[in-house]
Length: 139
Image (tube, rainbow, N blue to C red):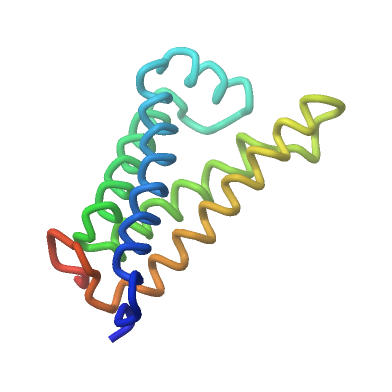
């Protein structure tokens, strides 16, 4: 079993909680300030922002909830990865910015890259039974 060592299950649960909290905060922020988020996405040249911003934010909440609960975590991880891969290069194009804007976009780009890395780890672990899961861990 992958999570046999002392505290491994609790560490996984804590990691899932922190990961889901960050993603949920990001997604809820997008939805609660939808007009501003859509406007920013339009400014960045994102395609169909009036449709994709709310849709992708809801998908991000679904992915975060799936990983937090341990219910179909592979699906949840893929939702998160899809969101981050689609959004990050469009919204956080640090290479096209200067000064403080460049630094700000670089920070957000790297944050999203780290979150994508964590989602890949959850995807890799999704074939194992997760401790403290409320649903099936595999599809």
